[in-house]
Length: 354
Image (cartoon, rainbow, N blue to C red; front, top):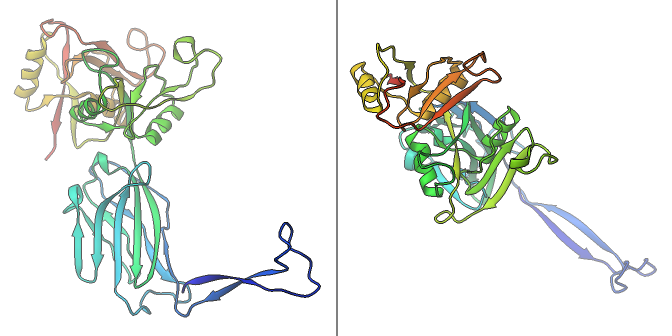
């Protein structure tokens, strides 16, 4: 049912003049309702939470305003799911269904379907969730000339971490930052993910790229080098910069993993190359930075031994602050990027489960 708004101008003798326009004595808005049920699309939950490798259902149902089911329509129902970009101006096709025809797109192929628990159920099932699946999804239902939409946000349990390469601070353009996160088993963090991390206590004074192309950094303890001592806590926003020419650090996001993260017990300290080979000999690979952060944040992994990681950095995860390890806070401690020939450290390994 479509509702038309009709503006009717009526002249009436003796009526009060319309303020500011003496030529209009009276106006009335008449609502005219067309025959036929109006299509309504609703999401029972605005936010859905899941994790990497999990399965999730994004809720969406459609109704007619004057009927309890969708079966009264005479037109075929078309259901279209898209993923919204950060500015809502672009949409990425995810899944389309009409009658018996089904089509999925891009990285969603083979991973998405409609739940169809009832005639009016357009909920989207996503299996084997990936880090890049995080975001806002639009469910659009079309029947003849009628259509309506609902938006659902898919949030992933995970951790945001700042990253800079061996070259040091502020050496990544936007595209290099994307690759750096991918190489560390993560994706570039969104603003919402960084904001949630800031609310959970993340404090970092170096500005980093986010997935929307902005450059920002989270401050919980205002101080002089980080915007000033008298400023309020918050996520500092540098704005949007040239993705090719501007260089900053990056904030990455990762979620749980399907595998085992562990410190390899070895009789001697190792060079970087020896560390890589030691993990391979143990049936694993040298762990990535995203994996040590996920193990620390999501599994509570705690180890006071500094170890090599795949990017050539040396770190160790502390969940229980204590003397000589991390006395003041739970954190993944960063030793640095030492000379790879130094035989001073152990190694963290990761073995993926099939």
